[in-house]
Length: 112
Length: 115
Image 1 (cartoon, rainbow over the protein chains, first blue to last red):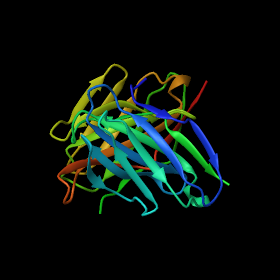
Image 2 (image 1 turned 120 degrees about the horizontal axis):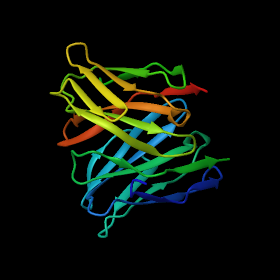
Image 3 (image 1 turned 120 degrees about the vertical axis):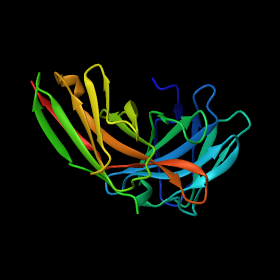
């Protein structure tokens, strides 16, 4: 157990819908990262937050957004969902912004 | 651009050693990581090596780094059926313009251990 928690574990929704994925980092970690894992693209970095502020953006679509709250938990919002958004979404956390990242168990999103 | 490459499959017999190889392209990588992903699970950090080291050993795991060739390997001694999983190599790079380090992953090597 890495200490990073993610909810929900599974999510099934329809195209055009909006969903929110939640992540709680390890105790003491200030950085949260979001990744998408799909069969064709592999593991892709989406976005990073550090102590409530956006730190870096990767291959994140404009339909996706994230935030980190004062208690350091983070949410990833996915809107206008398409079939191709079906994937595993992982959250990771680290103490600061260059440290070892520890991953949560992931949320499996299925868009029908 | 940054690319991390791994072979997709490796099959070994229980009790043998497994060697999973990885090549990366960016010589400015600071840390290189190995993560393990079991079916239906998240990524578990196995080990990492700092870029100024050549070797790191941790129980059954040995990491070798050849900076000249940009080659990283993970050796698992006495491989067990419980080692069957996908192993990801990742490099930590300074993310341009952000002052932050990010991980770039390979596509993963699926290790199958034959009893």
